[in-house]
Image (cartoon, rainbow, N blue to C red):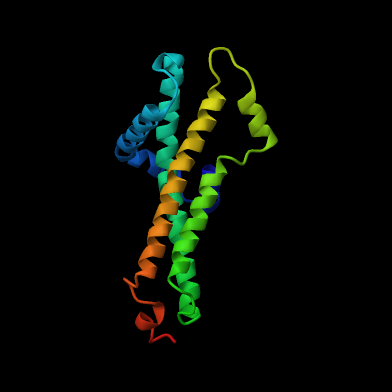
Length: 177
């Protein structure tokens, strides 16, 4: 999906994800350590090359999607803001948080939605370990982390809107209406 979107828009997310890997890898490694501490499996139950592959793929997907998902969220917020401006502030500020929550829910649920080809590919048996299953689970884990993070940001935006910390649109866009 990321590669198709990049080729259609002309924006090369892979290039930028390689540039941010030195910054995103420590965050991804910390997340993996937290997840490993919460697992019910023992360290010796996983093959070393499978663990290395899972770590590398998690870090790669984390770097790619750490760019794409916030980018999509910002575009969505800008579109809602544009609609709000043209409606002279008819939308409440909580709508912004709800839009971010909606995107986070889609991202979170993305790992659960697989077609027949994907299910067939990851459920096949392999000698030693299944690299396709490792890639799929790493991708799903990244989507889960970023989806939950985006949902929490949306909830925070809603709380800020309820507290009237920032003004509604008509106050600062009075010249347009």
